[in-house]
Amino acid sequence: MKKIFFSTALILSGAFITASAQSTKTTASGISFGIRAGVNLQNINGKDFDGDKLENKLVPRFQGGVLVDIPLADQFYIQPGVLFSGKGAKEKDTDINVSLSYLDIPVTFLFKPALGTGHMLLGVGPYVGFAIAGKVTDDNDNKATIKFKNSITALESITDPYFRRMDAGANLLVGYEMSNKLSVQLNAQLGLAKINPEIEGSSNDKTALRNTGFGLSLGYRF
Image 1 (cartoon, one colour):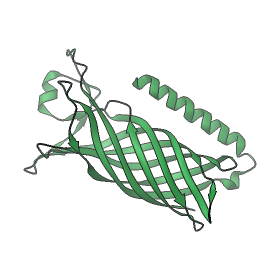
Image 2 (cartoon, rainbow, N blue to C red):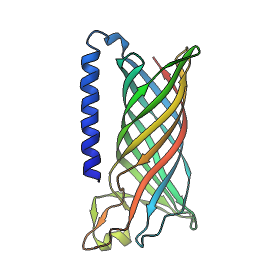
Image 3 (spheres, rainbow, N blue to C red):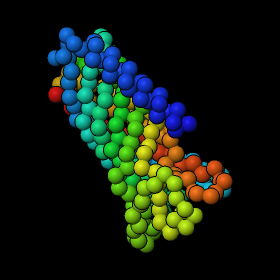
Image 4 (cartoon, one colour):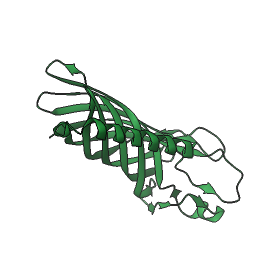
């Protein structure tokens, strides 16, 4: 599943970038840069080692970064970006707080029809994330640094918290950009790749942890 998604995301990204390069040879001035920041409500969903559904609580996390609007056709854009994204969750029964920091690279297909004095924003596309740091905090404020590996031993699984470094999934957004180029946006992120490592020698394939979230952000396009 993960390999298929990565391949699809790369093909889509390559196709979008190629198309945008061709369509903007004579409209380079239409390319614009923007910044965006806001608060996301994040969670880690999926199943635990026994195959039981996880019951975590949402946690607030910051997201912000830079984006580029590249025109494809009238009202249609491709919007790549680089975002710092906080993710994680809080366990419902124990209040153990998982905090993960990612660099996300979204590639969004954006539709911007005129609405009033501004433009409506409708977007969908893949993202790939790279974890750069993380920690787990218990209800006594004890902290453990998260380590990143795709595969771990049985001993490592009980001595330290581990996650995979890479994340991937889909983004959805809806928003409004005003005539002064300020915008407000609602977004949803659906993680499709497992972020838990495989345990060497274990035949258990029930564990499946995935990032999910939604949030509100403000942006400005230069």
